[in-house]
Amino acid sequence: MRVAGFICALSSALLLLAPAADAHVTVMPATARPGQTVTLNFRVLNERSDARTVGIDIFVPAGLRATASDRRGWRRVDRPREFSWTADGSGAAIAGSGAKDFELRVGPLPQSSSVVFKALQHYSDGAVVRWIQTSAGGDRPAPVLRLSASGQAGGGGGGGSSGAAFAIPVVVVLLLLGGGVLLRRRAR
Image 1: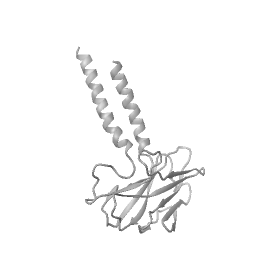
Image 2: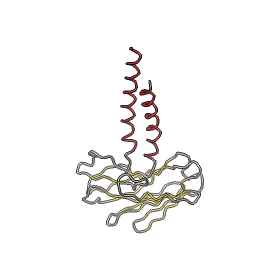
Image 3: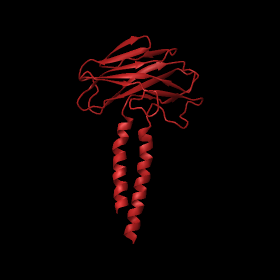
Image 4: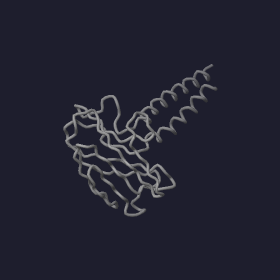
């Protein structure tokens, strides 16, 4: 019974951690082909219950052309290699566990394996979260567009998120193991 309890507790902990690992600025689609010109949506999640997301800045790497789209309820300012959106009021801001997408058309994409877009998320209390880390496993990963000849994800996920992709299969396996242990004990 202790093994089953441990497995259930571990499964619950991993389920609680999975959404946190996914909560940041991501790019969709996550994969494209080098040479393409594509429309990308940057999904911005509000991570705080005590403040709203009131602004987002997306930085485009040097050498990549980009144009931004307007977003209803948000003012957009374009600068060289930087696009910023600011909420017109609290009604347009991202609250609770909500999310909004901000659109850029970029291209042609370089002949490389990925493109890193850095982002700054502004909160109503003045805090700024810098989604700029390019090393694997960072707490504040930059949005990453994976590039492949097929335009399909091949092995690694895109968009800078991997925690939930790992946690969900682990939880399923642990739940199956826990169920098997319980069934064996009851059969005795």
